[in-house]
Image (cartoon, rainbow, N blue to C red):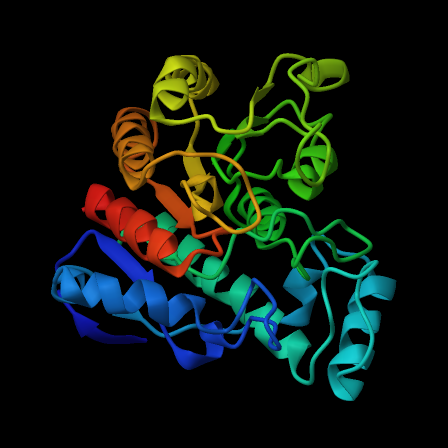
Length: 319
């Protein structure tokens, strides 16, 4: 449901308390204040008047099953009731209501898919999204349900989309997404991240390019700690050539702000300008190949000023 903004805008942004609830308290880096930190800056820039603002939506369980195993989904539901324990080995604590919160991240992305595929808003942004570490059978790295993975499966099965490009500039390698589709020749991946020798999850080497018939459809571009905008612009042309070669029908962009300088848990030094430039480039390719269809997912980012500036820059570029 649209709640405010410009009804004629080509960009839809999902904002609401139900989406903000996906966050972990007690000083956890992924706190529930992240969405509001972004939206405060977006309002300061006047973006609330230039986009369509949509309420979050919760995904039906059957759609979460498109990517995740039944056993794992049941485990999330059980721990969601007790609010105790961890969903992985210590990064992702349970809290009461975590199932609904995680299902809202997924559902907001699925609502974006519906809008994009209908042509009503060809570009959408979901700030609390892009949970790229979650595996089919377990949580990992603050990520409960892999919303991007679910979107890809739903685009295939319900909308008949074949060729998808997924671009990830979060500081962490998107391992949960990458290995789930490593042998999928129709999912073209670009993942620019801090070298796994220095940062979780320790994966995403340049030699990992896809398996079997998918060989060559995956592009990992690991960068050394301290990589700045100069390094970003050095590798970005290769990234864009890869996306262009995919000739995608839709682009999914994970624009994690933890690759921006002074994030508390990473070591990269991009500026928000890099994120805006990436979004602009991808919009151009989306316009060329896929009728403008692009869904941007906020991803990581634990310095609140960084994510506010980085994501606001992305939305400006989508406009």
